[in-house]
Length: 227
Image (tube, rainbow, N blue to C red; front, side, top):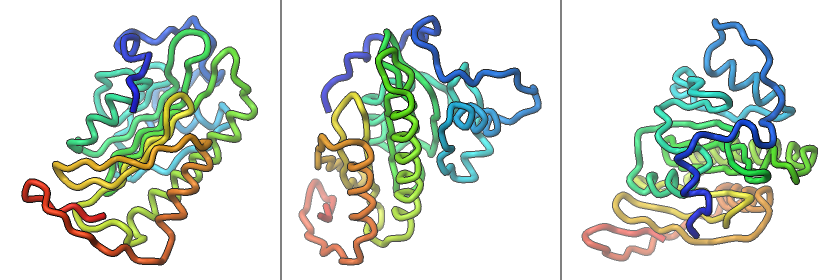
């Protein structure tokens, strides 16, 4: 994956005076949970709310304006590169939902989910000065629906071998790619220039394909890579 041009800006505070985040920031009772605030923000912007595992949902907190996470936010949600690289050595399960970006047009809705056999990173354009909000709403709603189905299929389809996990990286600004990984051995491949919806639908189709995978074992530093 190419280095993000935003990597130098990722550590800077988000520019709240640039094109506005989705206009949903109504006064909220202090008693609302982070999950309720996140849901209200997304639904208020016309989006759907993605499926979040219960153990993570109860830990979701509003870290700053339009940034919801189950852990401390040490890097900008826009910085997808470093989030993906971190997942090569899988961190504790977490979820990040945010509207983040910089400049006039580099704004995205991010949904990062690291849980069980899935490392899912959605980085979908939304809120920039030159973006089509109606089209982006349709796209994000469809991508969230596909992400929900991928999450369920990754757990139940039987396509993944023990200790293997599926990494899916889907971005409007950078290449889409996915791959299967084993501990200490990353095998990301299958780069694609398809639309986010087409890309996610292809992965879901692979997961739901009843044809079993035949293991091909290759010793790699005392590891066994199953293709």
